[in-house]
Structure formats: C-alpha cells, structure tokens
Image (cartoon, rainbow, N blue to C red; front, side, top):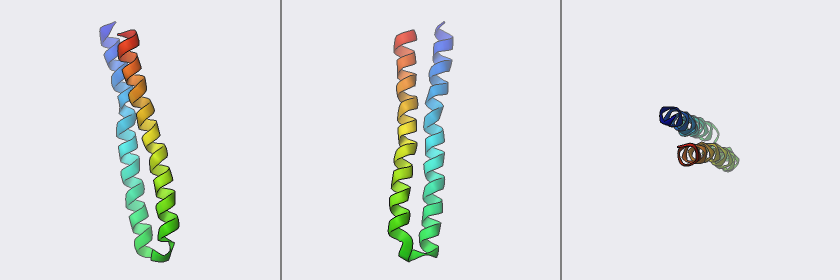
Length: 74
C-alpha cells in the first residue's frame, strides 16, 4: 500500500510542473506582447498576474492533495 501512496502523491505533485510551464509560457507571451504594443502594457500585465495566480492556485491544490495522500493514506 505504501508504494501506491507514493505514486499517488507524485502524480498530485506533477501539478506544480504544469503550473511552472504554464506561467513561464504566459510570461514569455506577455513580454512579447508588451514589446510589440507598449501602450497596452498595463492591461497585459494585469491579465498576466491574474492568470499566474490561477495557475499557482492549481499548483498549490496539487501540493495539498499530495500531502493529504501521504498523511491520510500513508
């Protein structure tokens, strides 16, 4: 049973990798958009911050689920 708990926690922790890749991609696109159209920088920046916060929330949920799997099922 312990091996399955570890595998489940590792799969839940993969949410952090997805969030990191998503935030990196979004930041690159936002920098590119601001470079092309500097007058829209404020709107782009605020949208980027909201999107990054949502992606980080997904990573935190995955982390919490992994911790719960380890301590409740382990």
